[in-house]
Length: 236
Image (cartoon, one colour):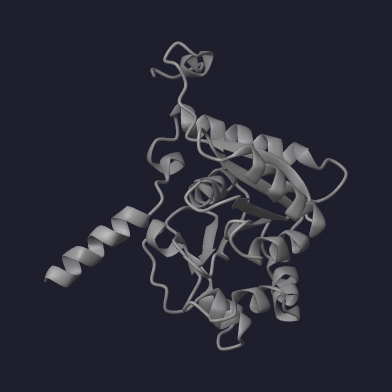
């Protein structure tokens, strides 16, 4: 009983809040819709079907941004696949209250099929592939030809594929995926992410030939009289 209670507390601690589902009329949800619009217009001459969301360092909010971005694209009517590619510290299965017995690691090691690891979420149009068992060699798996094949396969089924990737400055995984994705978004934590880290992260993404299409400033506290709080049509 004690173990179950403790396990539940851990799950609640790491699960990212889906405010875009819980409170779609909030100012924050509106900002995620603005992010969606900006992504749609970011590459007018090219098709953007795969989007990588990462950060410079851990605990800067990239998993929260990835999950909520996936939700707003699904709410727009697009068929969305969210993949937990953080095979060091996966959290997507907590956020969506899913099991993590099978996932991306099983798929990349050919122990399961795409159909086996793809899970329907409780949000219309949004499917999820959780991390699966944590492998000893995430970078090698993500950089494999099997990963390229999987990406091309899911692009045939989904309008947009969103990767929740590890921080850039911690491991090489995000750089590997940035090279494969159509676009990359960098999440910055207000008052925490250092300028030097941002510069180094940008240089790393450029070196991997990733297409950095923008950044999200997370946890920025606005004044109550800021015009965003006067969002047209809300009571907040």
